[in-house]
Picture 1: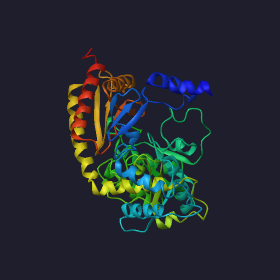
Picture 2: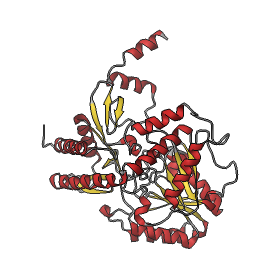
Picture 3: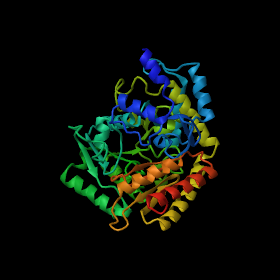
Picture 4: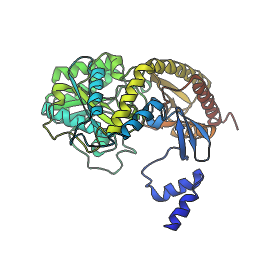
Amino acid sequence: MQNVMAEQQTYSDNSLLLDAREQHVPRGVVTAHPLVIERAKGSEVWDVEGNRYLDFVGGIGVLNVGHNHPAVVNAVTKQLGLVSHACFQVVAYPGYIELAQRLNQLVGNGQPFKSVFFTSGAEAVENAVKIARAHTQRSGIIAFDGAFHGRTLLGCTLTGMSQPYKQNFGPFPGEVYRLPFPNAFYGVSDDDCLQALDQLFAVQIAPERVAAIIIEPVQGDGGFLPAGANFMQALRRVTEKHGILLICDEVQTGFGRTGKMFAFQHSEITPDLVTVAKSLGGGLPISGVVGKAAIMDAPLPGGLGGTYGGNALGCAAALAVLDLMEHDNLLARSNQLGEKLNAHLHQLAEKYACIGDVRGVGFMQAVEIIDFETKRPDAAMTQKILDCACQEGLLLIKCGLHRSTIRFLAPLVTTDSQLEEALHIFDIALARASGRLG
């Protein structure tokens, strides 16, 4: 014990802690940047050595209201003095019920909706599939190339990327089918995807055996690819024609990231089920499925739940987040920040040939990095840019099928000066990675 205590007392810099991390944490859990942070506020974090960084990752889209927002901290602190955990399957508590009411209104817009809460996005996705199958009495699920729906066994089955998510983790659950996702940069049109759906119905599974189609209105880990209103509306028509449920996975896009509360609202459709997580809890683990009441009631009593699902602290944090979204005009702020970011990224694309595409919706923006000569995705250059940005004090991460897309997930409370600073650093990182600076 004395040796352990002595070892802990020496942890005063990043390198020592990261050495301990390598010893005690499996390599399967990747840490994108060689940093150990000690504190955070808003859009900024400080490592154990006192170095400041602009955080444009936000816990991978978890912190739309920023790190340690006082309203979230106060709500959780107050709840901690009342009930920290009881398990909703044992006794109910007000926060769970109030959060359900508010989400039902936000998603259903006056229609009868119901909500059930879980802990992670993957858990929400799995339960959405359970609910869809229970309601339709069908088994088939259709997902998309490039989709990301979690790291559980069903989650990575639905996920449309082979590496690193599938690895040698099979065999995978059956009755999951896949379609291409629209991608204008690589020449995949809406019509291509709809024709592929017709072909899938013709040769793999009849539509009357399909329980649900699950889609991210803007793909997250797949490369920040917007589905587009026309495509979403076409899917809605197809699903309604065949009695198939439409599940919108809003885990990353939800709660203002795209400039609306939920990304599906850009298409003016109403999904049957919506999965939520990440920024719902403002940093606390909580997720949920929000859906049409008749569908949500399909599973029999006992078929849904989870020990920590809708934990009282998570519900308190989520209610504070919804208050902030409403009272601090964060949807408008998302659009303002997104316009500025998008415009500046387009300027950088004219300056640096390695930027092949700029895309996004609201403050959910990304750039695709390519090899200028071959026009192919350049994962090595992408990583070089990220490393240079980190060295200059800006945290970003990659995504996309080829890990060649740099995504921006800064909190919606980011100030104009912080955005300008981040873009200046990104400019420097691009210059250094391209060899323009020493």
